Structure formats: structure tokens, C-alpha cells
Image (cartoon, rainbow, N blue to C red; front, side, top):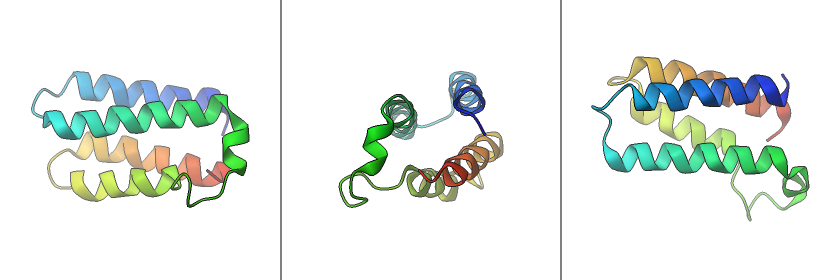
Length: 92
């Protein structure tokens, strides 16, 4: 998995969010913050060397959102699952 592939998944997630006005504003903001954090992590690999307690694993945050979305937003859940897998594969 390359950063480009992950960027494409993040773009797809952004598009799904934009196309789904039924998503709660607070949840959409959580997702947007997560996307920004993932992008920041990708552009600053040195951040990966910081202790886990300073920056919780992004894959764990994605999994939390998946748990929240499973029943109501299956398209987003699928997209988030792929992102979580890629982050885990990358050790993030």
C-alpha cells in the first residue's frame, strides 16, 4: 500500500461524506479531523516515531468510527475498514 493508494481511499471517504447529508455534523467533523490527522502523519513520517501515548494509533481511531457506523452508514463503514487495514499494514 502506497501513500497514493491511501490518499485515494481518503478522497473516497471525503466524497462519501459530502454525498451523505444524513451524517450527523459532529460525526462528520470527527471524520474530517481523522482524515487530516492521517494526511499529516503521511507527510511527516517522523511523527510515527513518537510514543504511542502521544498520538493514539490512527487505525484504532478508524476502528472506533467503524463501530459507530456499521448499522447506519454501510458505505462509509466499508471505506473506513479499508483505511484501517492500510494504516495497520503501514504500522501507523
